[in-house]
Length: 503
Ligand code: NDP
Image (cartoon, rainbow, N blue to C red; front, side):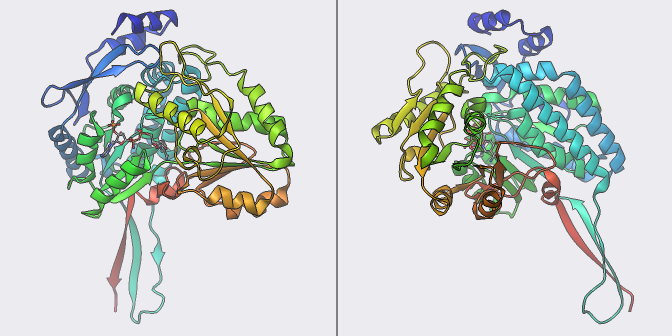
C-alpha cells in the first residue's frame, strides 16, 4: 500500500478489521480453496481519491475459470447443495446475511476504499441492500413449486404436473459501481433455488467480493457453491460467455459489452439475463412541488457521483417552471459536499478511475462544443483524485451526444417542454429504457403517462427506490430479463412437464 493511501486510511481512522483485510495477499476462491492466478499474474488496485496503489489482486486466466466452473459443476451435479432440504438452504443464507450484518461497517469501508464511494452511502445502501437481498431470497428457498395440471383437450387419462428445477451453474459478471450489491442481486436468487455460481467481479472493484467469499465459507455454505474468479473482462468474462460448463449467464454492465456476452452465450443457448446501460428521462410537470422535486432530481443523478445505471440523467421540465427549477437545483446542489469517500459528509465522491474521469470530462467538453448552456460544474478538479463536480447543462436538444449517450458520471442534461405528448415523445426517444421518473401532483396525469413510458421502472415523485421484492431491469437496449422479485426466480429455474399416462 502506498504511503498516500495509508495516510488517507489513517486520517479517517479506518477500522483494524479493514486494515487487516487490506494487508493480506488477496486470493481467488475456487472450490473452497484460496488460490492465486494459475500463471501468478496480479493487477494493481488504485484508490480513487489519492490515485495511490491500494493492493493487488490475482489476474485470473481461462484456466482458473475452467477450475471454478468444474468446482461449481461438481457441486451442482454431485454435491449436496441442490439436494439440501430448502429450509436448510434458507438457514444457511440467513446465516450468511447475519455475518454480513455483523461485518457491515468493515464491508462498507472496503467498498468505499476500493470504489471511491461514500462510506456512509455504502453502509446504508450497498451493504444494507446486500443483506436485505439475501434475506429476501432466503425465504423463497422453501416456496418453489410447480403445479398440477388438467390437460385441456387431450383424450385419455393422465396425471400431469410441472416441476421447477434449478438451471445449474450460473456465471455472474459484475460492474464496478455497486460491486457487492449487484453480486447479491445475482447470487441471492440463484443460491435460494439451488444453483451454484461462479462470479467475476469488475477488475477495478473485486475486494468486497473476496471478503464476501470469506463469509460464505464461515457461514458453512459447501465448497464449490460460490466461486470467485478475479481478472479482466476481456479474458475471464469473455471465457465465461462461451464456456460449455455454464448453464446461465447473468450480466450487469454496459450495453456494448452485454451485446458481446449475449452473442457468445447464444451459441450454446445459455440462459441469460442482461442488465445494461440507461439514460433515464425525468419529467417535471408544472404542478410539481419545485423544491422537493429539485432535491429528488439532484439525488437521482448525483448519488454515487452519477455512476448509477438508472440515474435520472435526462431532465425535461415544463417551460413555465424551467428557470425556477434550475435555480432550485443549483441551490440544493451547492450544499452537496465533494470529498473523499471516507469523509462522513461526502456526497460527491471521486469517480472510480482516471479512465472514467477522462470519459466524463470528454462528455462535458462535447456538451460545451455542441452549444449546451453550462449552469454549474463543468470544470476538471485540479487536485488529486478522480473528482468531477456535479454538472448541469440547460437548453439541450435530443440530438446532442450528451443527451443520447450514457455518461455514467455526475452530469445532468436538461431542456424544457410545452405539453405532455411532446415530453413523452422526448422521453421515449432513446435506445435505452431502464427507468423514468415523473414529478407531478396530478394523479390523473401521472396514471396517464406511466403506461406511455418505455422503461422497466417508473418512479413517481422520487428516484431509484429499489427493493428486493420489486423486479428491476430494462426495456429496449437496457437489456432483458429481470433481477429481484419473484420474476428473477423464474429465470433461474427450468420447468419440466411430467406426463403419466393412466389410460
Ligand atoms: P462494462 O460493461 O465495461 O463491464 C461490466 C463487467 O463486464 C465487468 O466485470 C467487466 O470486466 C466485464 N467485461 C468487460 N469486457 C468483457 C467481455 N468482453 N466479456 C465479458 N465480460 C466483460 O461496464 P462497467 O463495469 O464499466 O459498468 C458500467 C456500465 O454498467 C454502465 O454502462 C452502466 O449503465 C451499466 N450498469 C447497469 C446496471 C443495470 O442494472 N442495468 C447496473 C450497474 C451498471 P472488467 O471491467 O473487470 O474488465
